[in-house]
Amino acid sequence: MKISIRSQQSDIKYDITIRRDSLDDVSDYFDLNRKVLVVTDDGTPSCYSEKVMSQSRAPYLYSIEAGEPSKNIDNFSRILAFMLEKKFTRSDAVVAVGGGVVGDLAGFVASAYMRGVAFYNAPTTLLSQVDSSIGGKCAVDFGGVKNSIGAFKFPSAVLIDPNTLRTLDRRQVSAGLAEAIKMGLTSDASLFGLIEKSEKLDDDIDHIIAKSLRVKADVVSSDPFEAGLRKVLNFGHTVGHAIESLYGGSLLHGECVAAGMTYMCSDEVLKRLVPVLDKYGLPHSVGFDRDKALDLIGSDKKASGDSISVVYVDRIGSFEFRSMKVEELGRAIAVGDS
Picture 1 (cartoon, one colour):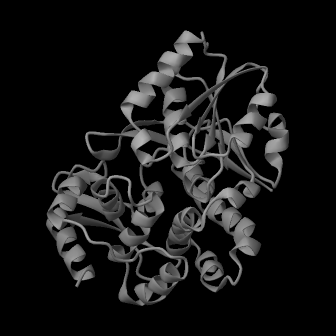
Picture 2: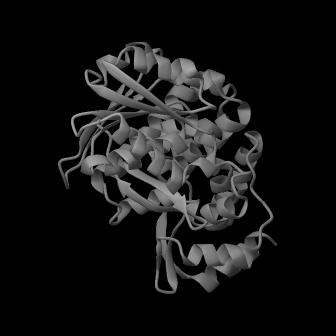
């Protein structure tokens, strides 16, 4: 199955391929006939990066420690230094093999090295497969604020092999599912219904991935640089990013987004959302310091002056943008926790 991103506003063009066992033939999808830096982490089974390296003409491996804390400016600098040491040129490539942290970091490196080299993404977690791998946004956390330094770096191609999900534990799969739930709530009621009614997730996961990616591909194609419509993808992230920063990585990104969504939807939506979150072991309420969260939200890149743009879901399958004062958001959080 192939999903294409073709932006009408720029020359951004790349394909997302979804096929089981596709990592066995990765060179059919990525141009690896050059020097290739494979970036992965120690939580990703090594067999995945080995498949990419075995099909590359001149492969190099750089592995980071798994987890959100590794998405930092120090690792960014170390990888760039490694590429300089190995004499990478602008004709070479970076390949991300792993989850969202690996993809974000590798993409940011590819955007900066020699003012940009080719970037390919082979996401191996559900969260990265349904969301972070295809949008072109890459960043590191800095100054205690998530994704505060970054760039747009669109991949040359994305390869999704759903078989990689077999090595994930249930918590990681559920965290990834939160992003698919987000897509369904804002843009595709049938996707939300599929997740809501699924009796065996393994049987439905390929379909869920494809439907989620079609939503995101349509949004990114229309608004590649987040000038308007693309902000819908931030649903659940306004409060979710603050929760994630306050918990210092002990909660997964998708878990924070899951909790964050509950503050930005109507009671009618919440009645269906909470049972779905419970079904997949996702939190719909977590304790946190509201004042500290509001400070983080105020410094968020979505903030403008004393207001912040949020995505609100009044009924499943549709959304609206709202401009809220930080104080208003604070009251919404307080109501949500009551």
